[in-house]
Length: 288
Image 1 (spheres, helix red, strand yellow):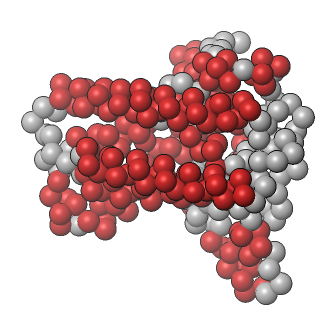
Image 2: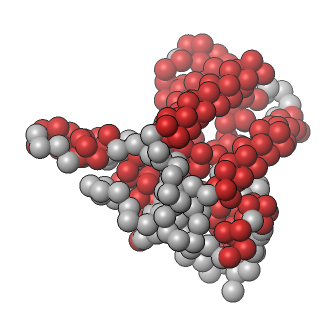
Image 3: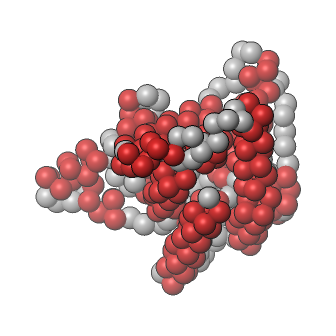
């Protein structure tokens, strides 16, 4: 388990660093597209995630499962031995569904139930920093560093992370490592400032354009996620990072645009714009 987790972490870090270099060299961080606070949030979020949140969540999951199902540790390893491909596909489908559900919940209107409203307030405040790009001048753009940016505790709020670590407890180590790597790499790629999908969607050959349009109903591509990070009605659309199929069939929130958003990121207060620490730690649990 430790080797799989270490390999997956090193792979993800390497890909992010390579894409940061790519975006830097190609000028994606110039002219206010990324601020000092954006870099600070990248360092703060990724550091706490690696050193505190992820190890703590792993400890909580294994501790809880040891209390509830002490005799089931590593008991499901036979599934990935006999059906390795089906195990990974099943893992990705369940993980992506849980992520999409929680992401939808954090963007929905306030529930009528008081306790659900309080829970949603936590989700929204933990998720809010992920939608802050650049400064208050509206010049900010989405970049690969944003993939790990969130407020403290966001990892604990996502049921798919709990599901993943429970799979580890049950012995689905390779399934977790491969499935998580696939989802993470795709999630990294949709945050990157790439436009290849727009080129294909707007291709003069109708077969290429229509094929890409059809693929956008199955997988999430960069512009679909960039639209989710826009300052428009589309910020409540395209909730899944990997499988647009769920946005299309389950959440009914699929949006396929053929141009980049005009403005990125939610509006920021002056304090959020000037302090990464405040942006990362602040919580407003008001439900009024």
